[in-house]
Amino acid sequence: MGKAVRIVTLSLVFLVSQINCQEAILHISSGARNKDYCIVYNQSWTPLSETLDAALQYPLVNLTSTTLCNSSGVSPDVVEGKAVVVLSGECNSSQKALVAQGLGATTLLIANNETLITPSANESDYAKVTIPLALMRYRDLLGAQQLFAEDMQVQLYAPPYSRIDPSIAVMLMIAIVTVVLGGLWSGACERDRLMSAAESGGLGENKPDSGELFLYSPMKVVFFVGLMCGMLVLMYFFYNILVYIIIVIFCLASASALYNCADAVMDKIGCGTLSFSIRNWTFSVRSLILAAVCVSIAAVWGVYRNEDRWIWILQDILGFAFCLNFMKTISLSNFKICVILLSLLLVYDVFFVFITPFFTKNGVSIMVQVALGPDASTEQTQGNLVVIPAEPQAPSEKLPVVMRVPRFSALAQNLCGMQFSILGYGDIIVPGLLVAYCSRFDVWINSSKKIYFVSCCIAYFLGLMVTFAVMLLSGLGQPALLYLVPFTLITSAVLAKCRGELRQFWAGTTYEVLDSSREPLLTEGRIDYSIEGAKC
Image 1 (cartoon, rainbow, N blue to C red):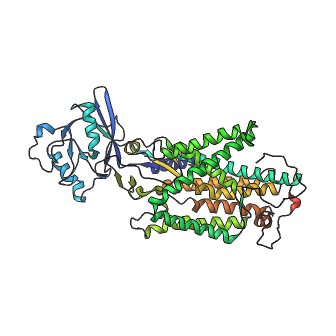
Image 2 (image 1 turned 90 degrees about the vertical axis):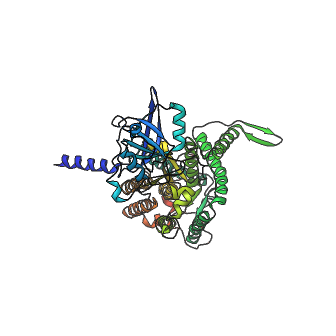
Image 3 (image 1 turned 60 degrees about the vertical axis):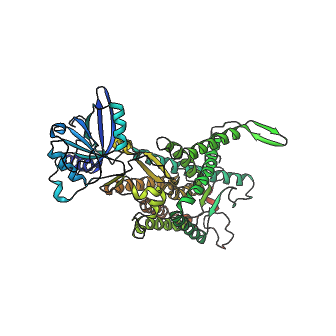
C-alpha cells in the first residue's frame, strides 16, 4: 500500500512539473540539411506533437504573396495535403485557418513582421479549426528560403519541458555555497580579531577590524531599509538614467570584492608575495596581478553585459564575490538587530512584489520591473500568453542584481530567446548576514561543532527548497525572503532557547556601542582566545 502511494505521489509531481508551452519548434529540412526555428502556437486550440519523430512531415508551399483571407486566386491542387505559409494581416488567424483548411491544407504558418503573440479566436471558432496553426518570424522564412531554396519539408512539434530544470539545482548550489563560505569567512575574521586582541593583552578587544561595518543601532537599520525603499522607487521612475550609474558602481564594487576574495584565498593556501620598490613606493607582484585580473573581468562584463549566451557566467562570478565580500564586511552586532533587519526586509520584499502590482499601470510589481528591466511587462511567458519580438531588438539594460543560470531543458524557448532561472543577491545576502552572525557567535562561545552556524545554514537550505517548490507549483516568481527569513530566524532563536543561551544570543557582540549605556550581556569568560584558525 505504501509503495503504491509513493508511486502515485511521484506520478502527480511529474505531471504537475510538465508544462505545455505556447512556444514550439518548426523543423525545416531539405535532403541532408535541416534547421529549427521558433514558432508560437495555442496549445489549447491546435495542439502539436511532443516529439520530432511523432510530428508529420509535409511539403511547404509559400503563399506569402497573399494573406489568405479568402480562397480567391489559390488553387486547391497547389495546397492540398501540404503545409502553407502566408502573411499576417487583413483578417484574424482563425479566418486564415478556415480558408486553408477548406482548400485542403494540412498546416498553416503565418509569417509576421511584428511581435509574435499567441494566436487566439472566438470560442465558436476553436472547434471549427482542425489543422495546426502557428506564427513564425518573417525573417526566419526569408533565411530558410536562402538556405533550402523552394524544396522545404516542415514538421511542427512542441516538446514539453519540466519546471524542475537542472538550472534550479545549479542556482541552489550557488546560493548555499555563497552563504556557507560567507559565514565561514566572517567567523574566521572574528577568530583572528580575538586572537590579535589576546596577543596584545586585550587592547582593542572591543573594536571591530578596520574595513568592517557593524550595524548596532535599530534606528540605523530602519534608516537603511527606508533608503532601500526610496532607491527602489527612484529606479522604477528613473530607470533609464539610474541603471547606468548602478552598472558602473557594480563594476567597481564587484572588482574590489573579487580582489578581496582572491587575495584571501591566496593567503589561505600560503601563496608568497614578491615586492619591489619604485621611488619609495612598494608594490606587491601578487596584488598587481590579482588587481589586473579582477578589473579585466569586471570590464569584460561591463562591455558584453547584454550578451546572454555566455556573459551570465561572469555576472555570477562577480555576484558570488560581491555577496561574499558583503557578508564579511557588513556585520550585525546582535540577534535583536538581525530580527529587526530581516523582518523589515521581509515586509519590504512582500510589499514590492505582491502589493505594488495593484498600483502600477502595467500590473507588474515594482520589484520585478526594476529587477528585469523595461522588458518585464512583455516577458515571453505571461500565463497563457507568449510575446516574442519578430525582429531583432536592441537589448535593454538590466540591473546586475541577480544570479542568472540558463534553463538547460528549454530547447524551444532558447530558439525563441534564452530563458533564465534567477535569484536576487538580496535573497543570498540578507539571510547570509544572519548566518555570518551565527558563525561569529559560535566563535564567541567557543562552539567546536559550530552548532549555530550549521543550524542556520540548514534552515537556509530548507527555506530555499520551500521557495523553489512554491514557485514550481504556482508557476509564479516568489519573494524568497518570505520563506527564508522565518526559517532562519525561528531556527536560530529556538536553538538558542534550547541551549539556554538566548540572552547572550540576543545581546550579541562585546564591541563598544558609543551611543548606548547598555552593558554587554555576553560574558567574556566563554571566549577562548587561544583558538587557532584561519586568518582573515
